[in-house]
Length: 126
Ligand SMILES: NC(=O)c1ccc[n+]([C@@H]2O[C@H](COP(=O)([O-])OP(=O)(O)OC[C@H]3O[C@@H](n4cnc5c(N)ncnc54)[C@H](OP(=O)(O)O)[C@@H]3O)[C@@H](O)[C@H]2O)c1
Image (cartoon, rainbow, N blue to C red):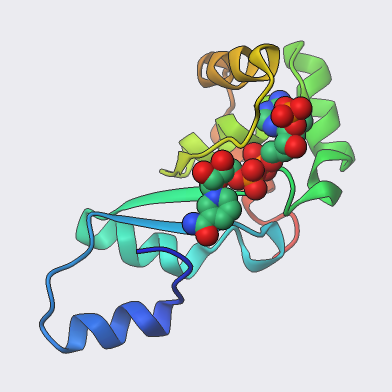
């Protein structure tokens, strides 16, 4: 399922319908990175795929919290966002068509991001 709200998912669950295998949503930091839908998915073993993690959140890529973490890790802000997404249980999607960006995005999985920084990014904007 894609582009669904918590209300959609709850209504579907109330009918007794089989849960989706994946939920794929545009993920806005100002909505707590889709916190409510992610929580619904985590409780039911549904894979949450976040998309537009970069393009929906330009303010995050320029925020000093994220640029500071990126500088400390020798990484890009985009890598920090993808690493954060993994840390909160998402399967992050990237829309890049650039080979170097794809390599960077995949390498971001190995960044060490402490739990307090994960929490700080999670509540950065919403
Ligand atoms: N279900 C739906 O309704 C829906 C809607 C939209 C998208 N999607 C899926 O979600 C995927 C990602 O969405 P998106 O394209 O909106 O999001 P995105 O990954 O946030 O944005 C990709 C854009 O950011 C640029 N970019 C700059 N640095 C990047 C980096 N390090 N890594 C990745 N991109 C970087 C890319 O340019 P370069 O190419 O130059 O790197 C590209 O223009 C899509 O490919 C699609 O499969 C699903």
